Image 1 (spheres, rainbow, N blue to C red):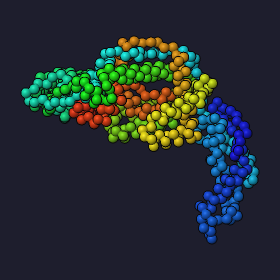
Image 2: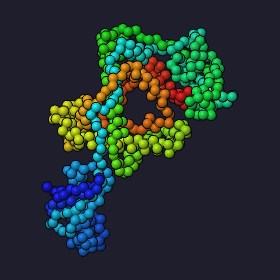
Image 3: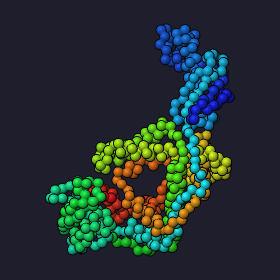
Image 4: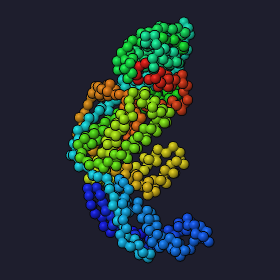
Length: 518
């Protein structure tokens, strides 16, 4: 073997000292590499770079210099392997000290002192209280999904100047909002596409559209919400000049064979309803499991005792801030625009990111500690690893991608990654299986969702934070139960904007394009 760890001792709470010996054979190879590196860089009269004899290098640089360079090469090359074999997770750069004199044809001895990740002092993790939401699917929920699909695949028929606008008609309007005769920020919009009655704008504006006709104009008075971020206009009365530029009426498709053909391979309506039921049930199960797991994580973070090295928090904060700024860049928003729009300071953002960094680091340390404590219970079997690899391969979009993914999964790093992910999934399952679940009703779920919505603040930077991969490796389920698979079917069919997405795309801009907050 090229090296051996002669001793490993704990010299402080989170500090470890390793005494390591690199074999004479490996050190001699590093000496040759050192001579070669020096030869390629040396400027010695009478010799070309890369062609300087060893003896000349010794005369000009000294043997000790060469040996020191060789030691640096050998230690740098073997350090990752040494740390991995010692099963250590350093949190900062190591301190390396040579142990003894450097000599050719002799082993290289040195000490590595490093700070490692701490362990957490955990509370009892058997029987953690968590809330479980129902997963049963009602006929009403399936009916709603069917209607959603009919609306998504609806055609839009233009209204002429004599047709009055009704509820659920799609209109294109211009809005000009004024307070005391003056325009105000966010009060005007051009070519705003709206489904009447959808609640995208103030109720007074949407109600005033009913009965209007294409080309007509109207002025409506609205009392602005007192909860607006802009306190200069919050609670004031505003006048909105409305002009109807275009109006269209939805024509929903019949539930017939043509409709079933449009949305996928469904022979009967019952086949479609069964598909929708399975999709809703899967999403509810995911949501249930994610909620239980979230309760478990919050409990563990709040009740575990951890002395976190500041460097871990600082590093996580840097990553979160980098992700935040990258998100802004992707959305082509400057930091100044973001701060101005949400009326917050950079210090407020930093404070929230710091709190998130502390939470993330605590969670990371807790789960690493749990993996050590529950090692015997969560160690994956060979069969479980094979199943995990098969599931990963199913995500490949092409045969070429599948072959590349397969090669990676059979590599040392791929096998290590699969082992870690399988182990983490078993840990999560263990915690959930051993949690004390309080079963909640559908009414409890609706009430909690309403409370979450009412407590949300536009200054919350979570919406721009890259969702760091959680221990669960799960995605949050769609609370509105929109079935992604059918959405993809619709996109593949290249449904026109007028049929499916025009209103949604326009309404994305309503926060800036209208006076009402989204």
